[in-house]
Amino acid sequence: MRIRHIVLHIGLVGLVVGWSLVAPAPLIAQKGLYPDLQTVVPKHLSIQNMQQREILRVTNGIANRGAGPWQLRPEFKPDVTIARQEILDANGEIVQDPIVGTYVFHPEHNHWHIESVALLEVRKARDDGTGGRWGGAVVNDLGQVQSIKTTFCLIDWYKLDDNAPNAPDSGRTYWDCERDLQGISVGWVDQYHHSLEGQQIDITGAPVGIYYLVSTANPDGNFLEQDPKNNTAWVSFRLSRDSNGNPKITEIAHSPCDTPGMCGEQATNR
Ligand SMILES: [Zn+2]
Image (cartoon, rainbow, N blue to C red):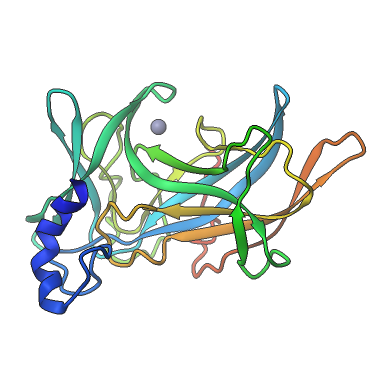
């Protein structure tokens, strides 16, 4: 239903350019200014023993490096709050507002989240941890696949780089997690700190070796954006164990990044 709605909005464009209806948002003939969601290199990777479980924690961030804001507006229905993505033109007029998901209440955070914002995965390396070649997602001792789709509240948390193009000079545009507008402005990052509930991956029982922590924004292609193929960042690490079997991780490398902000150097330890 959701996909059909998006197709209704962009289907005509797709037909004109011969674009496949199953593809994500088109790269050409966009109506309005699209955001472009890119994942900041994950930071603060650590492993903790919690109640006999081995929990990997990480901070990840999503930057908007597109031409327009990533803006979501709630639409209240009796049983559900729908999220519509608003695409603006250069004059700030809404030129598209497809349904892209729902607002869900997150009891641990006590505020409203949007679904399918990011995907966190731990994958076994198929190389030495420097080349970004990985295999399947790790399955822990409980049989849980460590590929976790996350919901988030979207806000402007910090500026990606001070010289971000089109970044607003003054303050945040999106700052709260109520059932109001949520989003990320051009040149801003929303960050999900490693201490938050949900920023954890249970890799209990994983054998020693080299792994990738892979973080992908907009993993289902629900949200309209300029380029859905530049959404992933990773950090690789070696998992070792001491003589008592306690896990230890050592970072090896991370995905390429082109500004200090995208490399995670601005990431705040909130
Ligand atoms: Zn939250």
